[in-house]
Length: 304
Image 1 (spheres, rainbow, N blue to C red):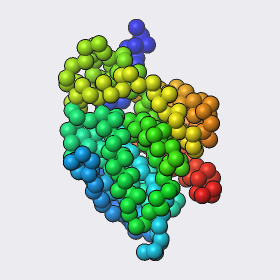
Image 2 (image 1 turned 90 degrees about the vertical axis):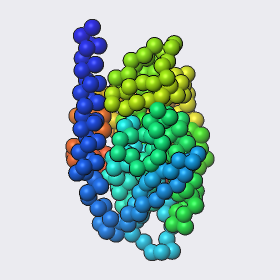
Image 3 (image 1 turned 180 degrees about the vertical axis):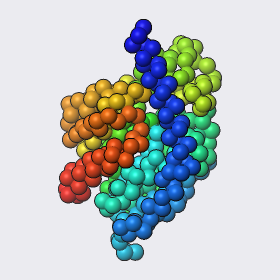
């Protein structure tokens, strides 16, 4: 009973902190920092479509000439968040030579500039959003079509893991930062963040904290074997997780690391000491950026 109460308090605190972070970043955060013209990095806005819904995003381009083309990286944000959370990591990838795309999922979070309703959003619709952005990225003159890196944070991490497994031959690398691999288990338990429900009688609407979700959010994952689903990707993988995460226990990333290794992937696992869910402290972000740079330079770009 004490453990359950402590977990509930941790989850509630995590949600409050998440909402506060979203608000602060949206009002005063990464968007207020230009990120362009630093080390020659260029920042451009873009839009594309998925099933009649507009997706809006930002791409960071490395310093180069008009004739240069760059490998593709796409960074996917967390549940309830938006692409501002992806900016530090997209910028890091651009510093390392990638055309780094980040975008707002359709119906995926607060202050989103993309279209779509949260009650029509699920992990699988977000997977289709990601594929639409990849299709757009591959059509640009400044990108190399055969070199793609996916990076996802929290729910965006689960989305990237599933997409990489389906697109094994196209994905040269995968970075999963505190991936929300717990979502299918949470659906089966009938407890998804603060939404409590009978998994045998799923309601049409769920109040997940302040965000309203539809039945599809649950039904799309409730039968999912997450480790079997992600095991189809056997390329280069980096998992990053904080050891103070109260929303998605670090054990999920540890298990994923083992599954990737057992299925032949070149997998690495880095722990951020003291970090919770979503890295907000500059020291945690910088350490993650260091691990990302080491991964792409030692495992991917050096061998391409």
